[in-house]
Length: 127
Image 1 (cartoon, one colour):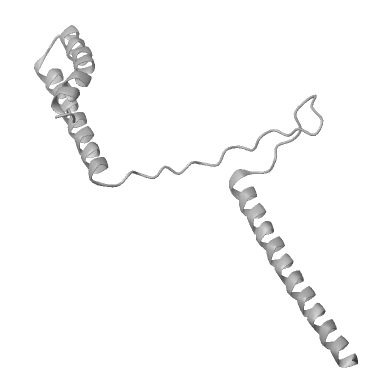
Image 2 (tube, rainbow, N blue to C red):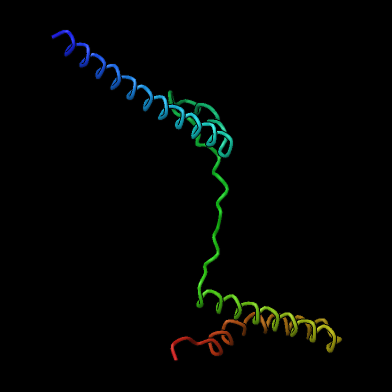
């Protein structure tokens, strides 16, 4: 009988130790998470005036923007780059070939206004 009680007590103690180790691991993980959050986000800044218990929001974490991948995204980036280079070349040619500031301004404004129309015509995806 006493051997059985000793075995059950040993099992209870082993279970208690396992639970304590799991709790310590959770607390350590939570502490690491809090420390990492404090490092990236910053501490809570303080109480809001007039509201008991309220705190100001933490500064937002910097957002990492991932670039879209794939054929369509690569094609879109290429098209945008081609449009930008051509627009820039038109501006450079207007600057070189035209002497009048009004003509240069007209080319600039005209290219700004016509750019969406030309992009829609040239890169129409419906056909």
